[in-house]
Image (cartoon, rainbow, N blue to C red; front, top):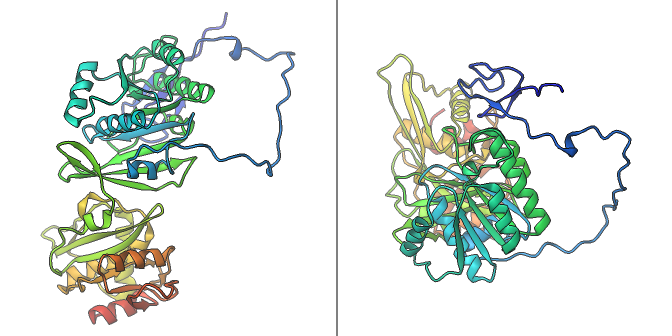
Length: 455
């Protein structure tokens, strides 16, 4: 009998190789290569030989099917991120930093879904049942009809779920699950992959919604093989800074709703409470106009969100000026600085540049380019942007300002919060009902000259 070939897998990126090495050739990480034991050989792993399979039913694209039913838990922010509620038989993966509040959020969600009529089981592999009950008592959820279990054996968990047939099962966490048919330690790549595959397949066959909690690496990615994110229907990240009281639940993948949708929660002594108007929260502590402060009208999923961008420019005592960014892409900041110098003649050499998105919010859309440039110029020239003005627009490498999507929604949100003027690219579709005084700019040079009198 041929000896099983060993496979070594990188725990950071999931790349496989036939031999061990200290550094992964795919992602460049050190000491992440571990031996990945192959699954036990069974009938499915043997050659198909001459056995004939059965025909698969085929349909055309015009087949009409009813949309999947959804169950809302009553937490509007969570229902929004899920795409309108929980879909039966769906698999959801939730990741986040340690201590950010994942278990608190899911215990509150479990209680809400159970009170909405869904039989719910909460399985904890990290805490004892007594610890979960203590958290439920602190959150005031002791009367919720949620059944608890503290177990890590995957076979026992699936047997229990098959016998109880709940509508929702929460597994906290997938890294603690142990499959006895895989020869490796819990939390290894092979164990996480096998456990996620078994639970996801079980959810589809039995029509049970399964929520898996995933640990994250120091880079902020869910630990384990990336194939787990491909298996599930929805991937959610729970984000936030420990120094701030609010948290953001972001959908990076959703087969039943829009991706990049966010839900905003505030951490209180009684648990997480939803924030209906996140723009008002992010701007609640904004002071009088100050150099380097600009309000950006952004879009997160389907929701317009206004956030404050803060910049600080100061002479650098070092030969290599510092560039520090929180909440935005550092590479895009370097691009904006290069365009300002090459197209507008405004150098930042010898100056330290600090950029921060207030409130711990993370922005990824290029529509923030113009707001970032305005904040940098405001800080460098020591000139304030009016407090009642919002800014948005994309900057090209030529210095031209490009229009962005959902302009009308951005302007309506700004008007709702009391803003009276906006700065946007020339070709933006502003509509007629915004009621704001809109200054349209065609390029970055004109923006610098008109707003700051420089360039």
